[in-house]
Length: 162
Image (cartoon, rainbow, N blue to C red):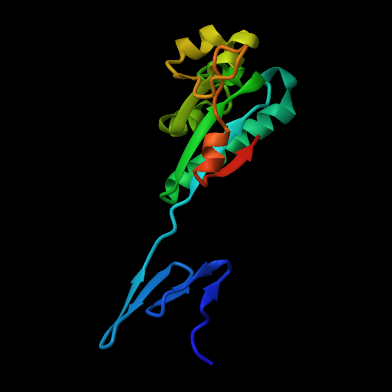
């Protein structure tokens, strides 16, 4: 039957085989197989408003839990607070908050908060007080700079919105 020449839409060279998590290179005299670990890049966008109650807390907790699991598995998560979600950092920084410990554990993966959103939702002071950078890599006219979500999509990140 032979080796299939196409895997999905990508062509395969005659000396290559594709198997999930395995790279195999074949030459005339040897076959080299290397087990690889798939490292995921995960953009975690938090839009939920802490003023919205339990449902919003559930969303944010699950977002942070996903980030913690990704870190544990060796993946690369980035957490972005945008929209009304820019109000979360000040809430999560409170020692008495039920998700405080989880937030602290994933804090190195927090990319920051949308600059314009923080201004609009009155969270600019809280974001700055928490020491988070404001993100403004999407220079949309009429705004003070937004966090670019498209960047993550363009770079192939798995992108989830909570």
